[in-house]
Image (tube, rainbow, N blue to C red):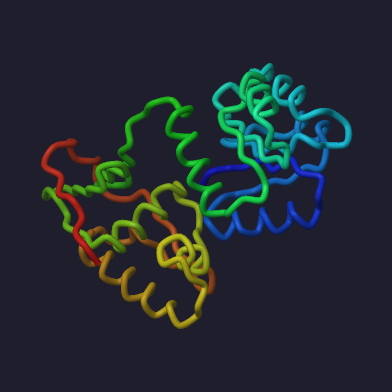
Length: 236
């Protein structure tokens, strides 16, 4: 899960924004001051308001860039200051992007994803779980006997579980991240997709049910297969 640090002193705005981001599948920590931001644990993305009470956001951005453990962190300035001069100052201080309030949560999420594609170190997009190789970029899955055909929703469900590296994902989070809904009536759809996915993957005990909570992937079975011979996912 992508970890976000939200540095915003407007409590109502921060709570609303954090709730929207968490609903979109991000893990969000909030701070109200520059001091809190400087003391925070490393994250994937910092959303930085320029009007913090104890330090100008431009200076804070530079201070964060000086931290050795923030070297790969993306910094996006989210502020009401929309003048071109302010934008230029912000970007030159070390920010990866500059967003002017008010903003749509869908645009902010898209900007975060775009920045992360540019700033994250290149890595093997494949996740290996037991005998499976899951290529998150190519959206392919292969097992001991070769390619495994999945529908779009089946792959999305598997990808969410794979990204959490064995952690439990609640049913509500799965509904939000795969079906973009929290309607309880969709729980039956989730259960059907989990059952079908288990059948197609053919690995006993791979998708574990945590009763009353959700699901997780367990690393079981044989060593992962070679990267060749994968099949793309279809439509749900």
